Structures are given as C-alpha cells and as structure tokens.
Length: 388
Ligand SMILES: *[C@@H]1O[C@H](CO)[C@@H](O)[C@H](O)[C@H]1NC(C)=O
Ligand SMILES: *[C@@H]1O[C@H](CO)[C@@H](O)[C@H](O)[C@H]1NC(C)=O
Ligand SMILES: *[C@@H]1O[C@H](CO)[C@@H](O)[C@H](O)[C@H]1NC(C)=O
Ligand SMILES: *[C@@H]1O[C@H](CO)[C@@H](O)[C@H](O)[C@H]1NC(C)=O
Ligand SMILES: *[C@@H]1O[C@H](CO)[C@@H](O)[C@H](O)[C@H]1NC(C)=O
Ligand SMILES: *[C@@H]1O[C@H](CO)[C@@H](O)[C@H](O)[C@H]1NC(C)=O
Image (tube, rainbow, N blue to C red; front, side, top):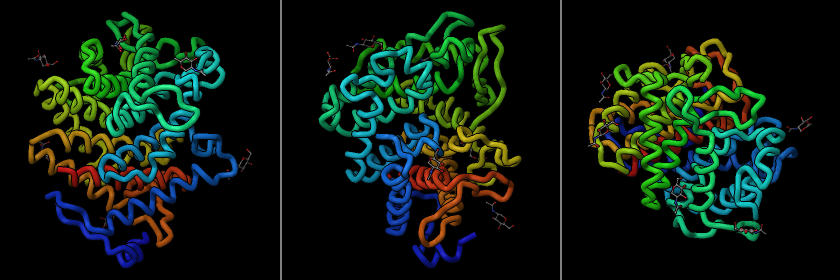
C-alpha cells in the first residue's frame, strides 16, 4: 500500500529471476528492517534479558529470529549482530550451565515451558554460530562456558532422549508429561534433521548422521510425509498412530532445508529429488502467485505462533536454492523469494514500519513486531540467492 513511497524512497529494482548481486537498495532495506527489529530486543520496556519482548512474542520465536540474524551474517559477512546474538544464546542457555534446559530440566520443561521444538530453534542458531565462527570456538561473553558445537551437541542429545519406538520411532514434542505427552509433532523431527545434519557436517560424528537418516525414514514410514505427492503433515499421535493432517508452511520449508543438508552430508541425490518435489508442492500451496501466505491468513485466524511460520518457510527455501544445481528449481524458488520480498517491502513506509500481510487474499492482522521480523526474513532469504 505504500508502494510508490518505497519505490521513491529506496529505488527498489528487481533483476528478474536470474540471480545477480542485488542493488544497493536491497542492502539498505535489509539493514533498515533489521535495525527496526533490533529495537524490540534492546529498548522494549518489557524486554527480558537476551530476548525479544516476551509480552508480544513466544520464547521459541526469539530463537527463530536469531536464525534470521545468523543467515544475514552468513550471506553478507556482516558482524554487526554477532555480539547481540552470541550473548542472547548464552543467556538463554542459562549462562554457565551451557544448557537450554538449564540445570533443572524438569523445572525448565514444566514451569518455564520449554519443549523440544522450542530449544531446537535456539540450537539451530548455535549450530549456525559454529559454522560461522568455528565449532570449537568458545561462545562469547563472560557468562559463557563452552563452545558452539558443545551446546549444539548437548541439545541434540537432550532432544533425542525423547525418541521412543512407539509407532515405529520419532521424538516426542512435549517435555512436560502433563501436556501433549503422546504427540510426535512434525516440526520437532524436521528441526532435528537439520540440526543434527549440520552438526554432523562440522564434527563428522557418524552417529549423528545415522540417527538422522533413521528419523527421516520414520517420518516417511509413519505417513507424516508423503514423498509421492510431496506432502508434509503436522505430526503423529502415538495413540492409534494417527497422522494429524494440518499443513503449515514451516513444516514444508524445514524439510526442504533439512534434505538439502542431508544431501550435502551424504551426496545421496535422492534427498534432493525429495526436496524438489516437496518445494514444488509447498510453492503451489503457500505461494501460488509467488507471494508467501500461510493458509490461516485467508480467514485471519493464525495464532501468534502460526503468524511466524512463513519467515521460516522462506529462509529454508534459500537453503535448497544454495544446494541444488537444477536451474528450473532455482528459478522457481527465486521467483517466490523475489515476489515475497517485493510484496513484503511494498507494505513498508518510509520509516520502515512494515506489515506481515502481503497478499490480497489475506485478512490476517499482524502486530508490528512480528511484521518486522517477517519482512526481515523475506529480505534475508532473498539475499541468500545472491551467494550463488
Ligand atoms: C509491558 O507489560 C505491561 C504489563 O504486562 C503491559 O501493560 C504493557 O502494555 C507492556 N508494554 C509494552 C510496550 O508491551
Ligand atoms: C562450566 O562447565 C563445566 C563443564 O560442563 C562445568 O563442570 C562447570 O560447573 C561449569 N561452570 C560453572 C560456573 O557452572
Ligand atoms: C556423537 O553423537 C552422538 C549422538 O548425538 C552422541 O551421543 C555422542 O556423544 C557424539 N560423540 C561425540 C564425540 O560428541
Ligand atoms: C539414498 O537415500 C534413499 C532414501 O533414503 C535410500 O533409499 C537409498 O538407499 C540411498 N542410497 C544410497 C546409495 O545410500
Ligand atoms: C517449477 O514450477 C513449475 C510451475 O509450477 C512446475 O511445473 C515445475 O515442476 C517446477 N519445477 C521444479 C524443478 O520444481
Ligand atoms: C493484488 O491485486 C492487485 C490488483 O488486482 C494486483 O495488481 C496485485 O498484483 C495483487 N497482489 C498480489 C500480491 O497478488
């Protein structure tokens, strides 16, 4: 809606689907939106140490946002947010405890409410730090107490403790025995695949790859993922081994990203074939006109968690873009990332107040904080396509 303003303000130019270095205005847009986002980290009156304002954002979402900053650092070489994100990850892993579940796992699970999928967002940012700064480098700050890779490995082991043979395998979602204790949510498995595979690429610890490939086999055998159609469902309830059929953009996106890493780890091209199929299905469902939209946006019914999913969808598509050599697939992904970033940016005014609703079909209302992250993630995801 502020389209003309923004075109005048930053002279946004799109180069078509063939990727080439983006215009300076692109880097200006990214740094401006990320700066805006960072204000919620630093200056909110309700900010909790190391987090975005907890009155407007669930804990997991901060972990997802730290991944956006990490991707930004990776794609641009910028060290601007290195200290902020490093500190945040140390604080959220309870400083010297060097553990996202702290020293009292039960308390953190039940009272604080951290579950396996939640801690895996943070651990993925940690593994990104290991990739960027060296796995055996100590995490920054006086309060840290260990290396990037040791925190990633610890989290992997803690989460994997919730693998059970029920319904053939899989990891439980909840760490609170009183809530959703029988559900193996898809996102818990899909995050694990990325996390453990990226850790494997850094450590060459063969056990990590072995358990990850076993987990991938399980998500297919359980019916949660249908490789023939490229469909990804929400998860499996171990009562009756029933598949819950809700579909979310981040499940598709995350599996596409995870399979890209599995291909890098194994050289097995089957993983890329699956990723391509799933990405094509995902684009048809969540970006039929090229602009990302969660299905619940049409009825304006996305809850605060669901509102953040398409940020993950877009960022993970970049991982496949950077992995595949299939030019048609790259072009398909590039179109989505460009159109989404363009539509996202078109909602911004000259002061970089943006909106999370980018399509004509959507009636979703987004709070300013989440809108800012969604736009930042779309721009960062697009930046990934300039790397190759
Ligand atoms: C901060 O928290 C208080 C109490 O929960 C709330 O009334 C207030 O609106 C919050 N302020 C912001 C900026 O979120
Ligand atoms: C730092 O980590 C080590 C190894 O995990 C642990 O033994 C030690 O107690 C930690 N230090 C503090 C101050 O908690
Ligand atoms: C290798 O990975 C497995 C599974 O996560 C873990 O139990 C083991 O401790 C790891 N080995 C090392 C040396 O970190
Ligand atoms: C590649 O992965 C597929 C899917 O998991 C598997 O069926 C196949 O055996 C693997 N191929 C090799 C050569 O390991
Ligand atoms: C690219 O998108 C077109 C149009 O949706 C589709 O038919 C084609 O299969 C896609 N190609 C790849 C490699 O994903
Ligand atoms: C919304 O509708 C307008 C007018 O029909 C069209 O020009 C525009 O491309 C549409 N935007 C999206 C994101 O579909």
